[in-house]
Length: 573
Image 1 (cartoon, rainbow, N blue to C red):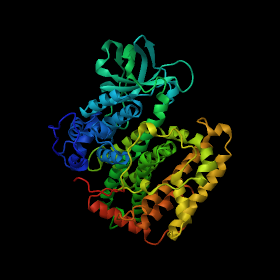
Image 2: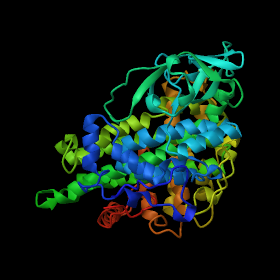
Image 3: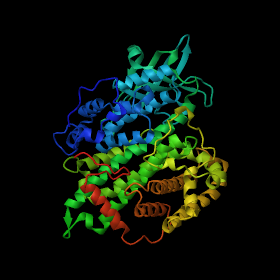
Image 4: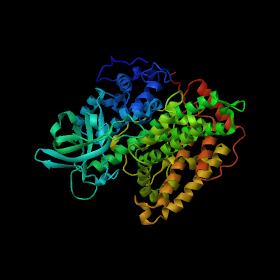
């Protein structure tokens, strides 16, 4: 790979000229590639973000992917953004988090609630390869933003910021910081505001960098903090209304939660590819390891988990455009379930790789790095418990009306090649209001004429589960309908998210009948059966040869160097 050092800062390629990032990054196994696995593993050992990797992404103009097209960037579709960043995560999670995710999270509140001037300033900075960071977390309160103590007090024609943020990615080198600050001492949801800070304009004497935290995964990410010491900040730094940060968070986080899981699918794509390569090269009992029953089943299960994760991630990303009033639930569900499924898949694959899954160099060294990085990356921005706590208060209303009477989702939600309406950041709903069109797709297909009998039977399994959930959720006591609910409510969100995943798989299969592989029924039957098993429900006997059919698909993709996700694209190398 040759890093393009002649890229023009402040510009993004025209749509027809957009480069292919997979091709641009080159063969990951080439020791001469400055962003190949050997260089990435060496940087990880040093605890550094690979400098050549950052220069490469600057040359590609990756920041333009986070900037709306109306402001000169390339961001117009949430599902496309996840696909582009998936190429980075397929290569190196540390680069994906340290270069991309932190900036994306920081910019989204500005696109959601910022003034025209703030949006233009942030866009210009990112298109010049600037870095942005989002200062939310405080060690004393974690993700409980409502108790954040860093404060910004009005002082004449400006604000004075006092306090600290710890364990924030890229804060020590950010050009811009979206800061979550207390601006009112009164309790309630109007006590905090976002501030957009130009770090170059702040007086150095009034801020102090805190120590960097070392991590087991994504070792190169600069995770540290910043303390503000009576720091003057212009009054026009406030993003949106004074006291309106929580409302902005509720909208902006739906976008980030809806996109990040789709990026993370790339990590397990590499894990599966690495283990399959080993399993084909290594022989035991006169056979390639891949042909041994347990290993073959594990590989196929990993393939299915990746496909299921991609179905849910892609559908939720598209829902931000198609069903923005319902994504408060969907975005939390995908951010909870997909990381969990990807982590489980990676750990099962490590059994096939055996002792080599611990090696930190050599031909399979990328596996252990990804295993560590995956856990850290999937915690980024919102933990599983936070996402589940977002769903719990909406369960009773969904149970009372949404799961029985919602209209089915429109085909555009699932047709991967269809255009999407513009993403209206400020128009995303704060609550689903008891409507769930995604799971209604299961009921509609199962009861419709001409349904594939085996598919309809499995749809019935999930609609029955949804009916059971409705009965339980409708009778939840008051305490178990809040964020301080007990374990039972959290278990209900897990089961509900699994049903959502089944509906996403069904919709992708049903509405992409012109797409090779996606139109085939075997992968859908296997995916729905696997999700039923996850619920502890016997899906019934699988058709003969189903596992072998999927294994052959896996082998063909590996031999053609194609990705294992829904896009099924050719990779570099």
